[in-house]
Amino acid sequence: MISDEIMKNQLNNTLQKTDLSIGEKYQGKVRDNYFVDDKIIMITSDRISAFDHVLGTIPFKGQVLNQISLFWFNMTRDIVKNHLIESPDPNVMVTKKCKKIPIEMVVRGYLTGSLWRAYEKGERILYGIKFNQGLKKQQKFGMPIVTPSTKEEYGKHDMPITQKEIIEKGILPREQYEKIEEAAVKLFERGTKIAADNNLILVDTKYEFGLDENDEIVLIDEIHTPDSSRFWVKDKYKDLFNQGRDQERLDKEHLRKWLMAKGFSGEGTPPKLDDDIRMQVAMMYIDLYQRITGQEFKPEAGNVLERIKENLSEYM
Image (tube, rainbow, N blue to C red; front, side):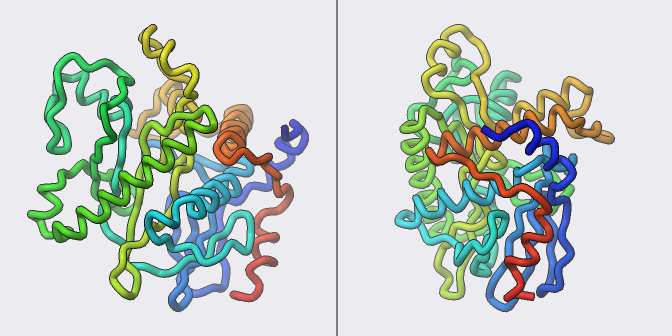
C-alpha cells in the first residue's frame, strides 16, 4: 500500500497538462494527444472529470488509467484489433492513428445509472429497447444490452441514439454497425469473466472504435478503466441487491456523490477538490488497478511531466 507521505507529496506533482514540441496537439478531458504522421502519442494526465467538467487532478490517476488500458488491450487483442503500438512511459501510449467512428458503444449488464433513472420515471422504451414492468434497481439483465450514444466534442453532452437512427441517418452502414456491436458485446463478456475471477462485476462500460488505413475496425481510446466503466464487488452483490441497498462501487461514483453533496451535478461552477477527496479517489483508482490486474501497483512518484519528456525524447 502506498504511504500517506508518498501520496501527499504527489499532490503537488500531478500532471495537469503538457505542452510538448511534438506534432499537432489535441487536448481532451483527460488525455493530451499529439498527432505525429500516422501515430498518436496519447498522454494520460492526472486530470479528472465528472458531469462533463474537468475538476482538477488526482495523484497517480494517469498512470493507473494508462496501465489498466494496457492490461485490457493485451487481454482482448484476439477479439478485435486495437490501436496500441507501444508504451514508452507509465502515462503514455503510442497508438496507430485511426479514423474515429462517431458513436460510443455503451454495454450494460445491470439496470443502474442513467438507465435506471429513466426507468424509474416510467420510461419503458429506451434506446429502442422495450423494458418489462417490475424491474428493480441494480437488477441483472438476462444478457448484456447495447445502448449507443453520440460522441460529442468536449463541453457537449453525449446523446442517446438507437441502432435504427444510426443506420437511417447514415452515421454508419448497417454491416459496420453490426460488427462494432458484436465486438463490443464480446469485449464486455471477456471483461465480465476476468473481473469475476477477481471478485468484481463489470456493470457497464463504453467502447470507442475507429477504422485503420485498410478500413478495418480497431478498438481505440481506453478500455475497462474506472473512467469508462462501472465496477461492483461481486461477493457483496446478492445481499445488497436483496436488501435494496446500493452496491459497493469502485469507480468515479464516489466522486460524483461528493460533488452532489456539495450541490453540483453538472450545472454552474464545480467545487474545488480538497486534498482529502483527491487522496481518497487516488486510492480508489489504485485499489481497482490491483483488483483487476492481480498485480501490485508500483507508483512512479515525482515530477510526471519531466519524466515523460525524458521518455519521449526520441519523438521530440
